[in-house]
Image 1: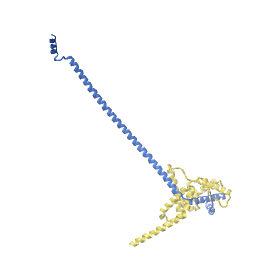
Image 2: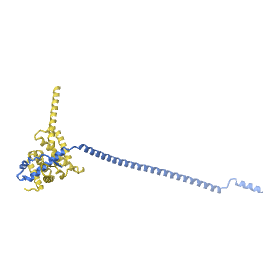
Image 3: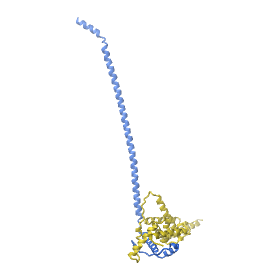
Length: 191
Length: 152
């Protein structure tokens, strides 16, 4: 009886260790992408880091309940989107707190460009285009922005976006269509 | 700040094809989206690998928070003790004034009593002198007779 209890305890410990290792692997693999999505959504490095920490803390607490019905990335992205929503909702409610935001302005966000083999003129042109896209993204609604960033920055499939946002694929398409139209308008493009 | 990194050019065309036909991006739009994605990736990579200064910031914030709380506590304690001292001071002044009034009243009572006593004594003395002038001395006739005999 005692030997059986000891064996059970060892089995539980081994299972816990395996789960911890698996979660550590998930963190190592997906953390940069979660951080990138939150950074592009908030344009605030400190806030993106904080929300990324909270995302993986929440994921760690609920890792036992993750049944693998979607990919770990989709599950984590859903947590990150909800945390971001909660943050802005709380921020609106707590109006007595400081209203200063750490979000960088669009010029600073547009500074990050690939140098590549392009000339200075091409880089200036690219910088201007990036700034225009940032301006358009800033003007999008929360859902449109989330869908747009997941699609064009994270390169996720519509089905993955639908799973991460909890929307139907048709709704995702509609939001994406409107977002693209606004970005095209900002860029001065025509169809 | 310029950062060199690998452009992930693949995928955007396929993404665009997934959209409705009416939303197919043209080459310029596709190029803008590609630059935007590259820019976000470069920014994220740089921010992700930057040195962390969270501990120091938290310490500064906690220090400021503690200083704010301490100052607030000092102000509240000062206000409370000041109010208490002021109240105690007023109570002391009222007590001293009451004692002074009581002493003054006692002094006035004593003076009134003294004045009343003096008046009675003076009145009695006056009555005595008046009576002594109106009533002759009991030995006066004998003294008169003796005086007459000596003259004779």
